[in-house]
Length: 485
Ligand SMILES: Nc1ncnc2c1ncn2[C@@H]1O[C@H](COP(=O)(O)OP(=O)(O)OP(=O)(O)O)[C@@H](O)[C@H]1O
Ligand SMILES: [Mg+2]
Image (cartoon, rainbow, N blue to C red; front, side, top):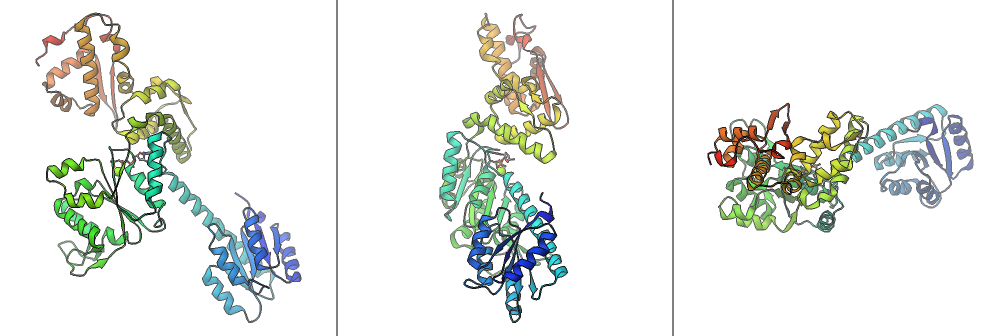
């Protein structure tokens, strides 16, 4: 970061003497000094000088006066700090100026120490503002939606088109496909971007609390309501509310949400008062709402209210060509956050990853990248560093099927692949998998032995391993026909 002593300061005064003496004082302190004589010139220079930190701005200027210049400067996104300089009779205006956003004001005649102190404080303030801005940018980066595949580009186009409207959006898509990121992107690009973005996970809130979460409650509304509490809709006033997992709301809550959507009004639990709210609603679900409606779990009228603009978050399988890009992005993200060295993924590792079905979509990919960065010591992450289950799924069947001579061997190979896939689907839980494929657990154990599939559950991860050779070449000890199906 630039040293304070090298900070760039623009002096704006029509009196040459003042400019000269200020320049002397500031240059002596090693500041980089620029000058302007009029308000117009000041605005021009403030656009021109890259990384201008501070403006010393006289209130009385020919033409556009200091206050007008200040007001204009403050409308720009990254304006420098401003210290006003006031002569006799302009103190009141200087006070006004601080209200307009000037950092401080100095009264003529100017005193060296007072000037330097004000400048140091203003520069500190500016630095903190920049740091805060950087942090905000970094935080925004965490919510970047990555993808170059046509399906992702199409999604982006839609987001851009619908963001400025106030229409309700319903995002559907599998788990981990970035529905939350999409909701945030819509908010960020809308006119409400400066307003709040309030997220409600409808599935995570117990049924008896959800109404009070969404609409708030008054003191004494129910046991435990010791204080009055604002609801999420109220908190989102002027911004966006994101109703995540909206398919998990009870019918009763759905009725109330419908009312907010129709009337733009909320009523706190235990209150008779009705409050107007200005909220844009974005909802998301990974459930098939059409089916939920048919089964009587979701209100059709609410569905139509929410589904004004439907958005589909593509599964990772639909844009698997983005995997190398996403991997690179996550590697950089983690490296930056944790001061890790950047690591690379070998092409064959990426190839395996592109063939893997990613049931957990981008979330699963992100978690895997994080884990590999921690567990792999080498700078290059290779195919052999990937979890066994990923390498096994990959082409166990196709390349080997050609080598198979008997129908029996083919059946075994198919069975093994099937079992591995089902184990994966059921989080490598044996009882669950046995139930899913409708065989007794003991039989599944036998099969695991037969195909040398070993399952070890470690801390927070599941590792399965099997030796392909078992299904290759020689006959296996048990034959499929012997099991108890
Ligand atoms: N296209 C993408 N680019 C970058 N990161 C992504 C992308 N899609 C998802 N992610 C990341 O994957 C994780 C899951 O995303 P998110 O929470 O938005 O998914 P979701 O669709 O809301 O999932 P769920 O239905 O399980 O709530 C997050 O950490 C998110 O940052
Ligand atoms: Mg989500």
